[in-house]
Image 1 (tube, rainbow, N blue to C red):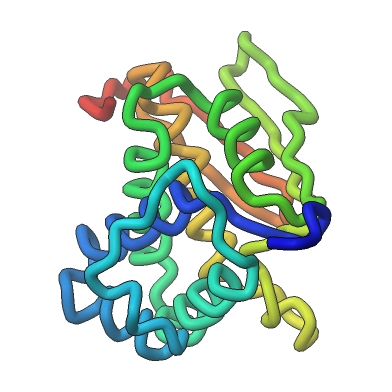
Image 2 (image 1 turned 180 degrees about the vertical axis):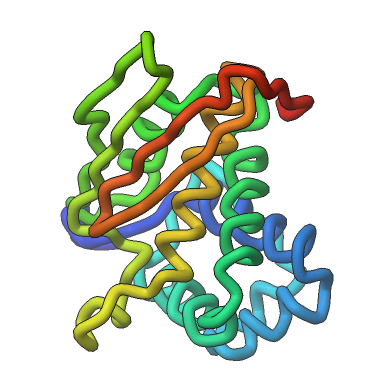
Length: 188
């Protein structure tokens, strides 16, 4: 890539997306998304996780996910949970995945923890200039699918370190995570 300031995405993100699609949607579902994205060459690919891919490839995959899963919020949420596992297999936690996502998806977006209350076990995260919204935001509406995908990433990332079930609500790119004080989880 000639211009270092051009938006780009680290291949670890693409690989984690492809594995997540496969786990939740099986081979046919993953391949349907890749065909809809116009990227069939990725069907059996394992990209070098240290390298970068042009943002347009990532954007096409996310737009295809939005299109094909537009009425499947639960499936998008589960794909996000799997993505959190594949993109952070060591379970370094939510702050690490926030930092990594901003480094790996270089589009000028920000993810910020705007409030954390250990007593109520609640965390609020704000996302600005979300690259997962892609063209659906340009069309005038943010895709609930991508917000559910992010809810899945954030809730699984927090569950992996807290060992508690986590509920995550989203409104206007502000995500509120609440730990279940009584519920333990086996995630991580």
